[in-house]
Image 1 (spheres, helix red, strand yellow):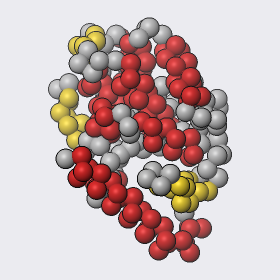
Image 2: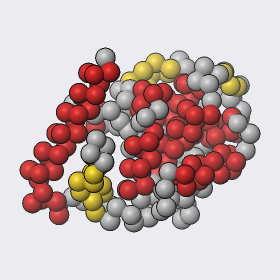
Image 3: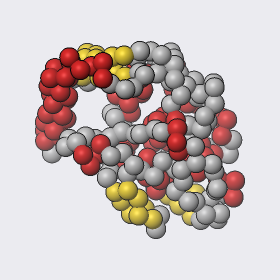
Length: 222
């Protein structure tokens, strides 16, 4: 099983290399302000554009929220939803006050449905204070060498002090995918969790064979 997963990832990585080579003459057509293509096997950057430029990160913020939650909490732990976790601005998994829900289901709501309410709930589990969790997010960023990143919230709501870079997201994602629970959840195309049908917002999982994640972000969510 492990060999098959490795082979799939290797094929995926090789395919990206081929696509880059075939399209290098059209690199200027890439519309992103900032981009990076990284080969995790050779640990080489194959293409970059303004890769260290600090920019708004929107819901890609949830990569860090998910990673920290995977590290901090038992996925089978059940929590009771507080009223202040509900009706959060932006995309939602539609939490209900006093609902009992497992951490793993909140993680699915976070990564598949891009639930801002799930982000607030997960950030509140440890101490009840979202700002404490955000502090841990910034500590983790520093430990991973994410020098052009600063978090002010766990969901990605717009804030001039909430930013990251393509290169920092590459560092974070490479590390996060080593966590089995994180990798499992972000690769799900769809699932049933907490009485909800969840379809992943990441269209790449449905359109690019071998894709394993990870998270989209769009300012129109807010």
